[in-house]
Image (cartoon, rainbow, N blue to C red):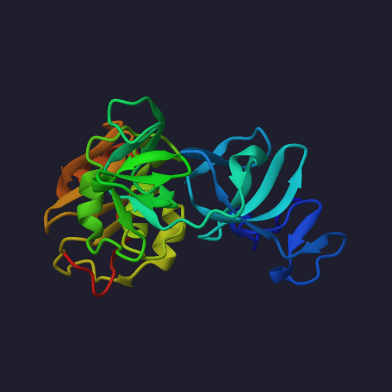
Length: 282
């Protein structure tokens, strides 16, 4: 199904065969309610088509709605509205996450012993269901996870800039959304989602949805978000930007003035907006 020009493919929950009921009647398409599920692997690519290219990534425990399951691939809608395809065997039903990984990364172990085999690597933001609490570990369906690395979902972080800084040095990966690798919008998504602030998946969508526009000459502060065409970063103070960028191939700090000049020179792009999310802890 080719989305009409006024329909964003990334957010249109219909393909050539089915559509979510929220769209209303769609000629020639079966209308479905969708089935709740969660991701069952540490990191899963969300693709444009079965065996297509990566659009974004989803982490273990991320809630989705399955619109269609066909030939080993599921057409899904993620919690932020983004749609795409994932292998069906990477989805599970019935899991109710209670905690999130609040460290840069951790491991699930086979036993309640840090010397036991590690069975799964878990990036920051992974959502897990805690089954039992032990002295130093939480028991989860994936294995035993150090208690110090998990945080209850009902205790979100409060400073997106602090979460962005946690990702300093993470390698750049186009479409990436984990501490294994992420891109500019992935860094903003990680920072805001950890604070329970709804955040779309791509920079252009974020620019249209996040916070309040600042005047070009307004003083900047920690947590402000700076947008270019196809790029985004977050201020850690009034002068310094943190962003995942292809220039360094990593999440780096850069004086905002330097970033503006470099992007203007190399990409002929100017800042398109500066935005502030009200009420943030800075």
